[in-house]
Figure (tube, rainbow, N blue to C red):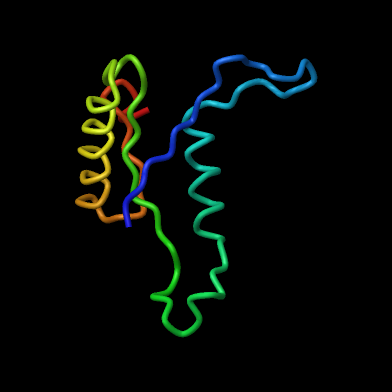
Length: 98
């Protein structure tokens, strides 16, 4: 129901032929698209339908310098995504409206 995904790239690029790092927006959109496209045959008729993603994005160090601060910021934003109608990704103030 709720989970955390940590994206990190401490040694970019890993391969000199790698494409440049994508923006957080692009990574979040690609992640959402792949989750929504998942087929979960193990659920069979018990499945509740399509998977939706309501997420909150927190970034280090802007939103916190420790795990609890980052999780709290991401959780607040995930709840905001749900209040706004679900199937949304809410970024921090520096990204909103952009």
